[in-house]
Length: 365
Image (cartoon, rainbow, N blue to C red; front, top):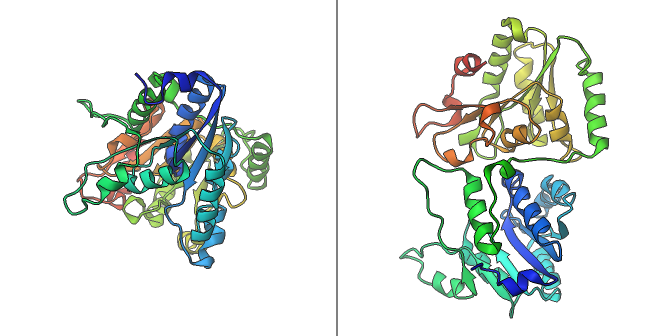
């Protein structure tokens, strides 16, 4: 028996999914939305991307408005409509009003952060609809959350952690199996990204300008990403510079162009740090125009070295070998394509990624 009743799944209609979303999340969730759409082509899927950084500070709005994830989700053919104006209180209120006018018969919240709040949001959007959501154990100090959860028509059964560990896609597979009876095997969970031709051409031109075009015989391109949203997952840029110097001494990597990823607000600091090492054939990169600049550039590389963030997962999506630098926490987020991934974890559970030594990465080569 599915959470969405079979009669609802069998007839034309529409459904709204609500979630907070990062690029790493969507790298895997895209598969499940796509398979849902293929299995039930008569049902239109809309997506509400809730901005957890919603703020009344107008200085932060331009950055939040242009979050590159939107480029990807809006290019995904399985969605009819994307709600993305949730980064300010006023726009979020307007988006709720817009969603209410759609009269969704089914709203599904797959938000894992503060799910009780999203139960309330889902019911606000669909006062009389079927509302499905995640329910966590109510902490003793917040008994009022039970009132929020009562707004759900039905909740997901808790995920049962299998012995021997699991991958984050096991959770997603469990959700969609409960929702609609979808059985998504491992082969269909591997990430993918459809890169528009204009951005593939852009990457080729950028590499040509750097003198690192793919046609250059015997020359390699290595993409290094040291930045993550939290400091605990970042690797020092100085370590990346030292790694480049070390790799230059190895025969297989002597003729290599290194591409260093940096978010736009870190470009200046990254340039200053790299200047201290006097490195040649090293270029800073930032996807400052469109999300697809990133996978297009990754696709043209021979190796990707990345901390635990979206770049690490996108490496699997573009089928380029990756060396992933991770903490011991959250092992469910390891790259799914283990055949093309080498994972280096910190020695202690409490360690930050910065504790991973340059020599550990060099040894992994």
